[in-house]
Image 1 (cartoon, one colour):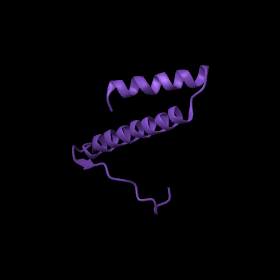
Image 2 (tube, rainbow, N blue to C red):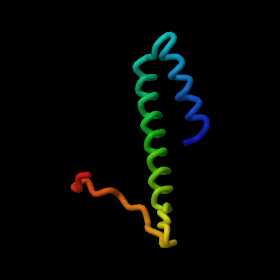
Image 3 (spheres, rainbow, N blue to C red):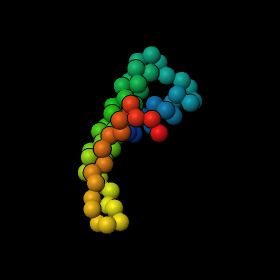
Length: 72
């Protein structure tokens, strides 16, 4: 996600609050927001894949995805 695209998201949000958006601008806003969210998620997943929990005894455990079938 480039800074130009983030700036465009902000421009569209500001315009939406003031004068409203055309159908084309709404579509552009949706696509840009979706791209931003997907980029953020990929970055977060990448960071979590390289995250370890260090136990008091010094051992490390890799963070893994939570199993949705397990209830807390």
